[in-house]
Image 1: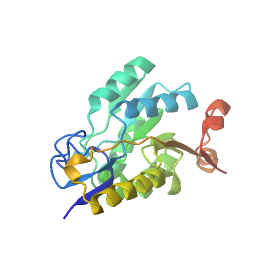
Image 2: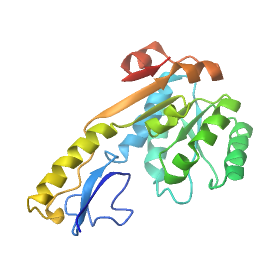
Image 3: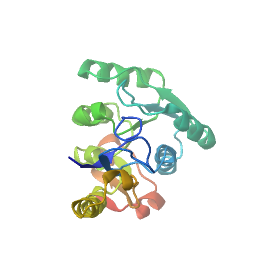
Length: 215
């Protein structure tokens, strides 16, 4: 049975396809990442929004499969120091990770869209608000839960494009002949409501570029 996925962060690393250009089986679809440089773009926007940011904590879990090397490369280019969290899977570990961020004088946080982070998004937002830390999230789900800002693929566009793949397969095209496509449309979402709660001001230039501002 052919399968078309939407939004897989890294379908090659997850073993869904052999490669993006040649899926090689009965699975294809659309990834949510446009290469690892997207991680750096999020750090860049975070730095632009809060120019005094110098130490950024990254909430990573052991199941995320996020390669930290592009993050380190982007951080060096932006003059940022990255602090990778310990394994965060349970609520207790998330609380411990945020306490460590404060001890290590982090002044901002990046929380990528990993399965564990998405599952605990309400808790992450709660802890960020409690510790008054600005956080860049990997998807809009976090901002909808009360988070500050996110930059990522525009999922409605991905689902519309997935419908085209389904149509082609129903007309006889093999999934292995349909390369995995990456996002072409991205969205920056900023919540002024969340900014007010933690007492920060987002630079007007960044606000002006936002696709959606929550007041």
